[in-house]
Length: 313
Image: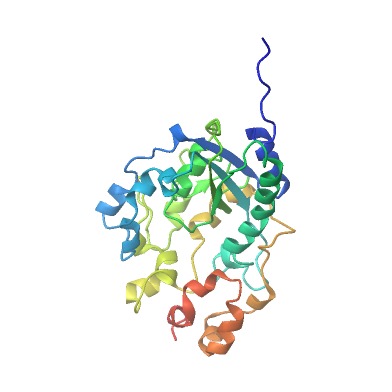
């Protein structure tokens, strides 16, 4: 007797094709059996490396098994989108703003790219999957994003603790979509990793990256300029230096990122508003200035007061 042919609309290959057509360079899947991650962050917390980010202690059940976030979730679609672009004029050496924040707000832009795909799927599958459920998570839920991407075959976790795609490096945004479709887990990435390279350890301005693969937020310029509340100490100011928002030091030195292609057409190309921005200019910004500048920008997370603090104002 002939076997029932696969549902091509919900096959992993068909789904991957839809997302790749929208610009995602990595698409992978985790079935229910692959969504158990265990207590992966407990040693990091035990060492106090979370600094004052107390929220990292919350929702441990979801962090250990992301499917528990929704009662209907059966699988995860993992996506990667590249954002390596050429720096604005004047930022070729010192970059006061981290690369991921040069363009439009990635939270909104990636959801904008994905929503039409979900709408299309719901229309295509209205007969076979009338109750299709999908929840998009773009750095907006307590999920182990990098571990999900690694297990879904999108790359490996580098010494800098970031997901490194073999062709696009670590300058990639990660997205997870929880769904009630039952999908097969993708093949794990099989290829080279960091090997003996320790460039990121050598270039981290605060020495935040440990030899055994952890990042101490207390010494991380990205944490200090974005998440830390209150004034910076003298040591912290030395770590942050010219930085106003974030830090790319452990990525800029990475050989995988050197080889990664620069995106010429992307919603994450540098916005004109950042042209000429430096510490002195930030000190002069008013609330009205910032209200305009923060539109569709991740910089709103730091707030004007935080940016002025980082600028030494």
